Length: 114
Image 1 (tube, helix red, strand yellow):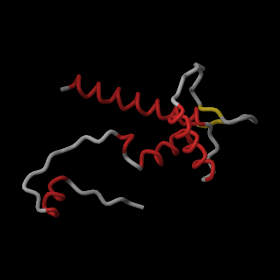
Image 2 (tube, one colour; image 1 turned 135 degrees about the horizontal axis):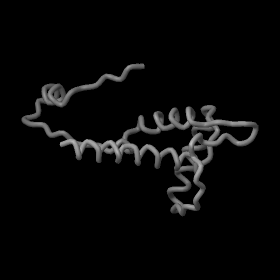
Image 3 (spheres, helix red, strand yellow; image 1 turned 180 degrees about the vertical axis):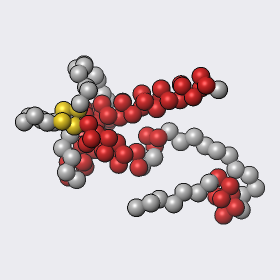
Image 4 (cartoon, rainbow, N blue to C red; image 1 turned 60 degrees about the horizontal axis):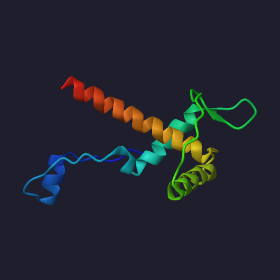
């Protein structure tokens, strides 16, 4: 399913706006982010008979979460489980962190190139 995309000038023309401004929306606010994240995580899972693990995630650390954030991670993991991707809330958190760090690196690299 291809999503229809509009340029800023097309939106301006459609809405009759006198001016337009570009607004940077962090990727984690966009609803498609969770769908993309699920596919990234699914591709990185590997199982050798036990619980699937994320390939390349060797360092184990204890990390504290707020109750609210942990419940949200549990809800995401449960939602994905119902769609056939069995993951833990911690695996969801790891994948989110990976995506955020990758985006930060890209932004930093782009800023240095300017």
